[in-house]
Length: 423
Ligand code: HAM
Image (tube, rainbow, N blue to C red; front, side):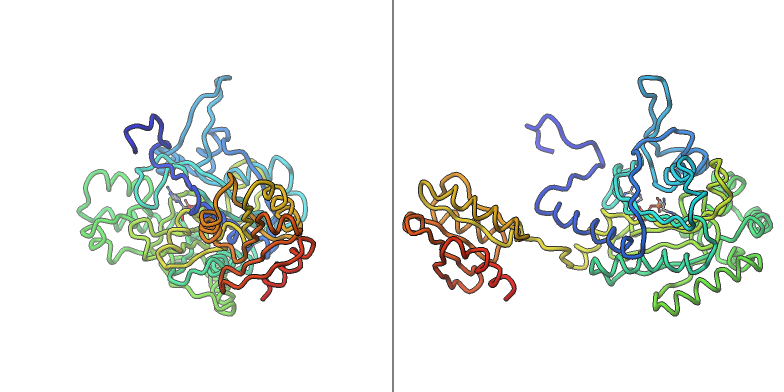
């Protein structure tokens, strides 16, 4: 940060300013549009909630809840927390508005900021942006496949190709306890340090995610949940994979996947982009069988994902993909001399009404300086109005690509520009 500037953005919080902000918005819009095409309705929820919602919903033992929440007492003494993720809030709203008693599944999409007090680094922020979807109230494995396919389609719509989808099943309430015991017994025999032993006692699955190479070596023969699923969970997962295969969605199985949130059951997945370095998770999600009941609602299962918009933009940059139209305008107005600006402003208004993105030069610039701005704007057409055009009620329409130009009566500008743009 510049020493002369008294304030900077809070640590670990990215700003998106032009021109990159245009790309950011295009990425977010593209992700939301993929969900919209699959019938997900927008849901707008508060960015802060009762602290208890996350403690109950996400799990007290997770890093997200125990170490990373922005929690504070409001002026009325209530403990509130800036939402660290979106699923718990969606469940709260579904229960509160009794959507769980209406037609199922409920399908919603959200976009916005989330807050986690993490150690900031490239691709890991304290205010992160997600686009997420939740589909609640059906156990149909085709719904699991849909949620995964929507994410895959969203990434492809952004233009990405270098990511991979990792898939596993975390089983159901019936398959977990026996597996947990088996894993704990295996871990008890390993020469692990005391903090890791403690973790093995509280949440043995987390130990599988230990990144240290010597621990990974010790874990090479650890029993895997995927090999100990209940027959129902096994069938469900088999069906999900069969549908993904038919949809042509490619995946690799990762039976060691550990998600940072406690509510996952059965189908669980992550999209990983190897070009992103340490923070390679583009997005992830899965099923959550017990969550709604845990939060006081009906015993409905659901499945969803959260895609990191910040990281999706970083991935697009790493792949050299331009998302959306980077130009400021399609048409740029160049008024030269006193009296031309209102005429060009009126033309700009007409073009905008016709759906053509239009900007113009302000401040009485010279022809040279205004044309420079026109080029920099990314526009394909410039409209020049000088004293002569003003007197004759004409406009010079210039094709900025070829350099060709025509003098056109002011009334015909919209038609002339439209013809040039469709060319
Ligand atoms: P999550 O895996 O915690 O899942 O986050 C989803 C995505 O948000 C990550 O894959 C990553 O791209 C992005 N993300 C998370 N933390 C950060 C950070 N500190 N900086 C930048 N990006 C970040 C959830 O939040 C679940 N609610 C997803 C879900 C919905 N599961 C079921 N439904």
